[in-house]
Length: 552
Ligand code: ACM
Image (cartoon, rainbow, N blue to C red):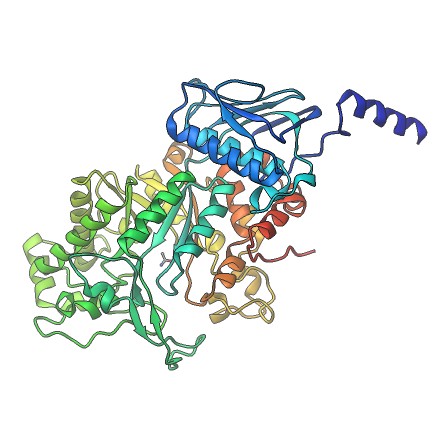
């Protein structure tokens, strides 16, 4: 024992002022980490930006310097030289990759651009005391980085999270809080669900009634009682200025927003605003913004040119507002019964010569026509489309990206046919599903509608189940290059408050981050859980996030 203590003391001396460097607990786990001896003191260091760095990257370093100065209580200046932490532009490094090398007297970060520098900074933040995420100085927290060499790069380029702000509306501040946490875990796409049967959430200048009428519903059903209504008028929407603010906030954190306008189904709130877009001939029906959950059978009349103009106008404003390359056009769960009897839809089917064939109805082919027309329209604005996997039924034009949600089948089929794919199967990636088998104590969730004590094991998306998902399983070797990435979806029928929202997101988003970022051989659920306890969960506490506690 005495010998061991002596050996440890000698090691500590070799390592400099501190004892042996602590183990790292970085989520998602970096590709390669080599520990070295000693630590590097960051209190009051200078951060040196390579003059070759672009302004956006230098801005990220400046924000890190400001955060460090505040948290460790001693100014950390950005400069072009001096001893400290060097940020080096290295064009040989892949766009999202980075390397970090820390020794007792200096540290160096290398990347080729903004994303790499940003991810290196996120990694460094996770190596520091959690007070780095806070708003108050904590000079005694131990502001040292362990000496090490890290080289890191993501497995998938598309690392998404979807939030439904329609069934329940979440404030700009809450959306920003989610973006902050996404940034920590290196997620880079925020899929923002902005239109639904139960509420329209985005200002569209040409159609003001979408937000005057469509953003508000007369009450909400209570739990799963479809005949009930709480009688409380409910709603909200984001103005274009608020959206621009959120886009800029996300961009600073390396996150691109993928806005979704779900069409041609899930449109009852739009129909309540503009009844003439519906399927009842020229006679407007008393549509209402829906107060119950589920899939409305009332859909857009896509046989009408007026509806097509509406869609192009809306998507045009959305495309002008959001700078990202993708617009999500939904396409899921569109009941086509109304089209079967609507004279305009039937006339369009005849005009286009659409037939029931190969198990695909003429009405499903009419949806293909809408998808293709919107895809072409958006291509004219320099945008690509993403759609839920229903867009694969019938014919889908080249260049569309498919989001596989009804299991993995859609993703397998689409990638095999040469379409790009984002995997988001319900069984692993739906964060509205219950996260344990405890039906009695978990908050009411969509799983409570169908799960029984016997079946809840299958219905639950536990942390471990999500963590164990392998997105390339069953994808043929030659189609794997089409899997752009993975996404989790949070639908909010039963989630009305920020606290509940966070409870459903965390810590499952951290498991998501590892399957998006880490090579399969770097994944290890036991190591991941210990990283959560050691660093990630205290960090969520520091950020004021309400997460589900780990099962013991
Ligand atoms: C979906 O969950 N309806 C895409």
